[in-house]
Image (cartoon, rainbow, N blue to C red):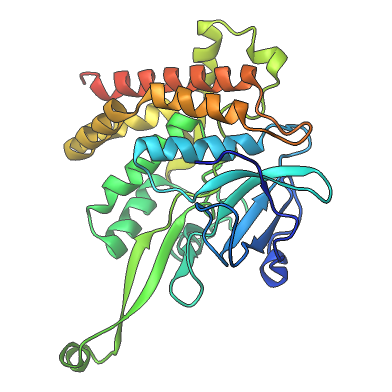
Length: 321
């Protein structure tokens, strides 16, 4: 459990990999943890990403950290993420552990396969990023049970209100596995490739990060519901219907997959809102550098928002056709 902000001032920069992440809406850089970190929960000598808030939304980096905590409570795989700062300049941000080891696995973003299977795919904006092609491709490389993992991700994104799960913000990890001599002779190949979903990363465009406290503190229940129901996944319905899927509406697709519906209802029933409240209280109380704290007002709003999203998800999954 994190009890202090992590000071990354002396962590060595990963200059080679950082070049792939130029500063944009959210400045970021990659770096390595020390061989002997001060924190027991930090993996030694491991690549991490330090991501700051967008200039307009100074508390945004907390969304990434809280989304990770929600993933734990929901039983969803996401990279560990902690509050950190650089004592040389006072900058605060979210520190996320890398989710694979170079040379052991390779990350293959969804955008790569969409670019190959969808004619004229808009690689930059992902306009044709859609659920039908996702399902078909995932079935091909992971088998039909993949839908349990994929729909769990969509439930997670609905619960945190993530609007930015674009084609390069999810994908697969590939690992080459050596075959036995007999199998290799039969197949004519020495290796097989094992696929699995990568942990669901880059979760900071969520949890009302763009709302200023003076705005959401005045919201009544009706205003909160309107905000939630406006939320949409980046994902579209199909190549023939490029409307983005609504967060709430997307759960209605579960009705045709009874086993998945049962799994997601169980995840929601097991989702402990009291535990989330305790996590938020702990993060509010975390000693922070000047200007880096999570305010009580924002924490209370995030709890209210998540609680209502969970209620709406449960209602939608329980609705009769």
